[in-house]
Length: 190
Image 1 (cartoon, helix red, strand yellow):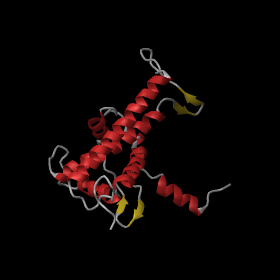
Image 2 (cartoon, helix red, strand yellow):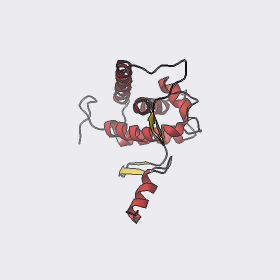
Image 3 (tube, one colour):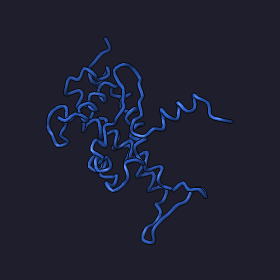
């Protein structure tokens, strides 16, 4: 069975790294991401989560960042994520800055980073090689027990939820028109 024209378009659109474009409505179009602006995405993830090693390749987690960005955007509003991304990509962004826009970027980045790192961690338990799946370890390492993995997964999910709560609180404390209507923020759909 050969690949048709539609298959090539699908592969081009969804498997081209770092220039993935997806549109859900007229307000939200992502062609870049809210990480890796200066080629130091792994260091950004490490600074935010403390879990992803800065020496790791950002390429291996970029897809999870894209998926997590979509999920967070669906929860808080695509306009909020797009606004944070625009500021992140601008010359005015300061990662250590205290402006509302700088804080918005960091508040949006954290749940995205936590979710992406949690999902990535679940995929790194085994390596996928030509000869099948393998579990590798050095002489001074041991594989974790299943209960350890479960506990770590739970802690990563809880960190993601706390990061989302902090983002919601930040959005509630600052009047962002891009925020989705919700009962907790006191916004109503008009």
